[in-house]
Structures are given as structure tokens and as C-alpha cells.
Length: 408
Image 1 (cartoon, rainbow, N blue to C red):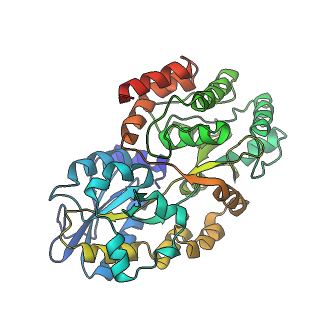
Image 2 (cartoon, rainbow, N blue to C red):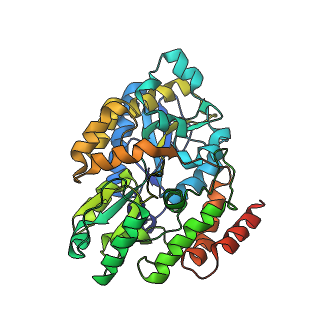
Image 3 (cartoon, one colour):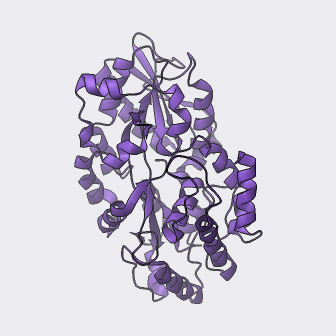
């Protein structure tokens, strides 16, 4: 998954970055080169993914030419490339979006079977999240449940005990009141798809996208979850959501404006590096006895128009190997999709209680369903979501308007 805050720096820097593993080719493959695409949010990101590409080059016997773009720009670009001769051979893919792009991707099942590749070494949920209708479209490099990161210093100052995994909505509400008394806003809100949807699932059990991938905003539990957030905003215990800036919640947490934020394991490195306070992590508050969270992840697939899918498969198996994922885990970059590499992430995360929190969250995590309407839903949430989260309009009315624009 991406680190949301880091993406801003790349947006300011410009559009497409081409890395050093390149032979100058723009797309597809040649006799000695495989082009692959990845979202890149910073110069540090670029160095990391160059290293991953080098592993793919060594295994495939071909050069790897990396196309990098900021996260939001990445999906626009790849949507115009897939299905054409200009598509990269190796395609980075996010679980939330695999349904939208599966028509342009090569199912990997035959290659997995013919090569004897051991898919069982991966977390089952990570594999499932990158499959559509029983077909595997990408090999995962990371996975992970949504979590709640919190400001340990702010909690201590407010006299709030460090939250334990499995803490409840009532526990959070009590903590929010204590934090407010000490002059601290409790939660940074967002309307960004995965984090808003994950918060609603955890707190009220509502699903914006059902298990079949259909957008279903008429679920009353969805409106109830949004209403809970709006009540926090009204009470001054949560920040207002910013639809124009997807990193506003991260920034509010990092700069100390808000004492907690919903994120994923992929945020750990960024939060730890930038925060000037002790960072803690726990599960997203849920009703007593009803803990649940979404999990999501990313991986590498192969475009249907790739001229050498066998070489591309050799590349992505190396790019998701235990050695490669262990290296990413040591950097705190990604919670590995390979179970054998996960202990290394725990050792290097540098946040007390991270293993306990992740283990607890993973026990109840379900993959966030992908949807062919996922990108459009995300755009509409950015446009209209602040109205309901910030309490400007009733959640039911805003959700109905989004449904109407989706043609539901």
C-alpha cells in the first residue's frame, strides 16, 4: 500500500519519474527489457522500488524499466495504458482496484501451476484480495488491517490509559472527552475511501461496498457510522474532513492537532519518522464483542499485452520473494504478504505493541471488497463526503446523492 503523506511531495515535484533500471523504453517490453509501473511518492520510495526492480531483473534475465507516478496520477495513467501496446508488462496493483483493471491483466493461475510456484507461502487474505472471480491477477507484496495510530504523549497528558487491542467505541468516547478537557482533539477524520469505509465497518458494521463488489450506500449502518463521525466533529473531538486534501488527516496527526488517526501498517514508517511524540498503535474502536476491520494490500500483476509473460512472471515472483519482502519489512515499508517475513516487520516497526495490535486486528480482518465503481465512488466521496462527515447535511441525503450519481 502507499504512504499517503509521502505522495504529496511527489505531486509537487511533477508527474512521471523514470528510474535508473531503465533502458529508455517507455512501455511494454523489448527483447532485453521489461517495463513496469509503480506509484512513487518520494525519492526514498524510488530507491526502494529500484531495489525491488533489480531483484526482478536478476530473476528474469532482463532489464527492468520503472515508470513511477504519484498515487492519484498512477491510476489515471494505467487506465489509459492497459489493453494497449503501450501497457507496461509488470503492473503494480492495489486490492481495492483490481476489479476495475482485471480486464487488462493476465490471470496468473496457469503460470502459477506450470511453474510450481508456492502460493501457499502467502497470507491467504492477501492472495484473495488480489483475485477476481476466483482468478489470481497479482502476487501480493504487502497486506494489513486498518489500525488506529495514537499520540502516546497526548493520551498520557489527558490521563487516558494506553488503549489495548479490542478497545470499544465507548472506551474511545470516554478518551475523546478526556482529551478535549486537556485541549486536545481526539481524531483526525477523512473521506478517503478505505479509511472512511474501514472506520464505518469497525464502529457500526456498515459496508459501502457489499461482498459482491456492488456499491450499497443505502445500508442504514453506513449512515449511522457517518453520523457517529459527524457527532464527534460537532462536539469538537474530531477534525473536519478535507475532501480536497487526502493527506489532511495524516498531517493533523503528525503535527499534533489530532491525537489519533486511522491508517494501516504501511503508514508506520512515515508516522514514526515525522511525529515529534511517541506513536502508539491499537485496533480501531468497535462495539463490545464485535471487533472487525478491513484489510487491504498491493502486489504485482502482468498486463495482457505483455510480449513475454513468462519473463514477467519470473520477475514478479522475485519481487515478492521472501528475501525481497524481508528487505521491505526491515525498512518498515510494508507488512509482508509472505507469512515467513512478517516477524521481521514486527522487529523493525519500532512501535511498542505493534505485534499485539496487528495480531488482534488480523484475527477479525476481512478484505475490503473491490468494485468496478470504486474510483468513481472515491471521487464522489471526496466531493460530497465532507458535507456529511462535517455535519453540514444529513448522511442519508448525501449518500443518496452519491448513489444517484453512480446510477444506483
